[in-house]
Length: 237
Image (cartoon, rainbow, N blue to C red; front, side, top):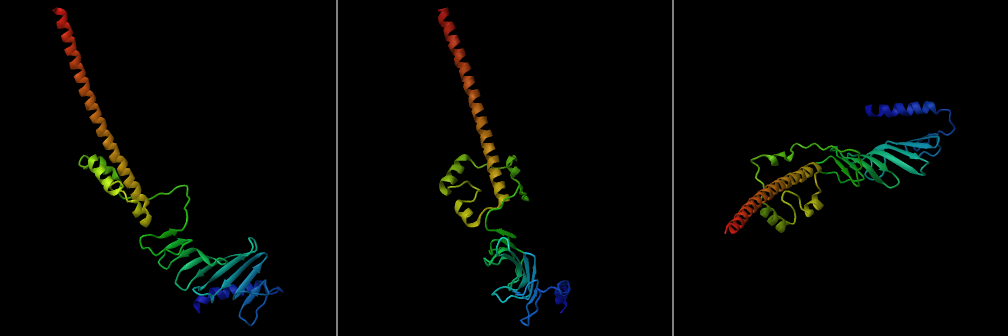
């Protein structure tokens, strides 16, 4: 009985406020209308063009208790907030009979989806997410690539891996992404790791090119010296 006190108090206040209205009705069916002579729920309130129905219990399959709200503009648009028979709290598009927001008994939240039974995640969205800024906490960042003890995979080994697997080592395959999606934080870390490794490859390549340039320059100087000596010797004869 304790849980019914707020509802009874609300009903009492509403009855007092509308007691003199000719639009109130309390038929023997158990449905009470305030501002309407044709109540559609156990408590149906109409004020101006806005309708509010308080449904203490619905006979619809799978639905429990809650409230629904209906406006005349847009025509016939009705929303419900219900606690269903499965322990979920739902914001429902009543006309479409679809839960737009679904909060499961485990606290997981779905937007336009009921597929929220994943213990590793809390928010599930069917459709795109648009935001001005998204921050992802990441415990590990691949700066270790620049440490002296990091073992950089030789390029020949990278080429062999790509030929055998059709993707970079340490990066998920297309099939894996299609099946499991990607985790933004770890994927950004994996991409950064590849950029850092590529930087090391470029640095090493630059060192090799510079060493070859110095070798070629030294050889060119020797050749120039030899040519000069040969030319001088020929003139002496």
